[in-house]
Length: 141
Picture 1 (cartoon, rainbow, N blue to C red):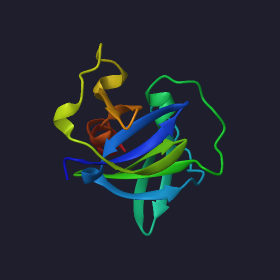
Picture 2: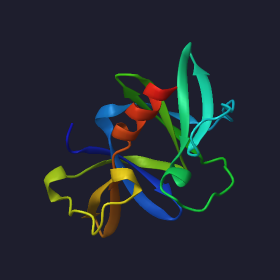
Picture 3: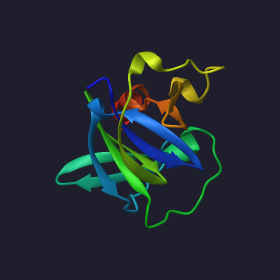
């Protein structure tokens, strides 16, 4: 599964996240807010009896907020501590590329989420892994 990635767009850029930790992709639903939650946490949802902590990828990565659209999705990530959902602008497809071909990022920012970049079929993908951040957030909630 190292070569399977979900591609998504965020603030006009293409991103990819490893498929291995993704449980499902959901249509965007407005989460219930949590008083005192961290800035990047939009709230929680009840998905078939499981609590899903919803995080804004734009807030997490310090990108300008944009209103949700019909294309907005929540990528549900399964952690040892529970479920975490990452709100993205649009989920594109499952793409394949060799993780060994990822070029490291020029600087480590966004809480270590950005793993690097990769060129595929003439397009640049920013490789992200939200799992470590999700594990910390799910544990707090």
